Length: 113
Ligand SMILES: Cc1cc2nc3c(=O)[nH]c(=O)nc-3n(C[C@H](O)[C@H](O)[C@H](O)COP(=O)(O)OP(=O)(O)OC[C@H]3O[C@@H](n4cnc5c(N)ncnc54)[C@H](O)[C@@H]3O)c2cc1C
Image 1 (cartoon, helix red, strand yellow):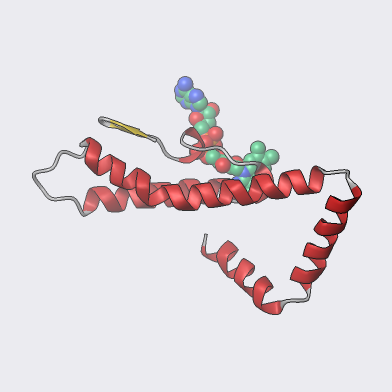
Image 2 (image 1 turned 180 degrees about the vertical axis):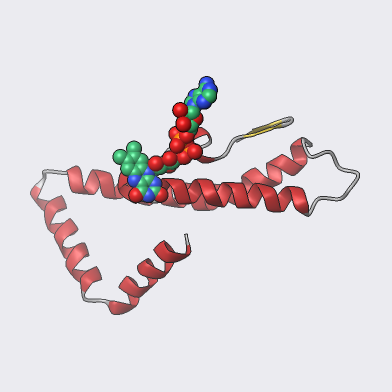
């Protein structure tokens, strides 16, 4: 996502399947994280400093990778035509639907993102 004096955000930095419904949110979070990194830097450090930009990159890596992995997994699971995978998918959906705690956690994540 970064090079000396260069930082990419949004889809330029990472792509994600539209089924996640979170592409734009990831971009907004990138912008906020980069702004935060630049606003809290020591005055004598250049805003294009690579170590500074790497810190921004690290701060976003976990969330982006997690969302990409979950979305890719769901994409493959829902595209699968093998009977065992279909059964696993239906079991997962029904299980999630019957667990208010899990549903509430998913809604909380979507609203906060
Ligand atoms: C079908 C679909 C549904 C989606 N649904 C959702 C959703 O429900 N929720 C969600 O959060 N996200 C969703 N997304 C993802 C979301 O649209 C993107 O993640 C988001 O638009 C990325 O924003 P961005 O500003 O990074 O890039 P973009 O929106 O792609 O903006 C980049 C801009 O740069 C311009 N540009 C490109 N090259 C140049 C150039 N050389 N010079 C000047 N300008 C240039 C482009 O014309 C474009 O206007 C969806 C995506 C798709 C395809």
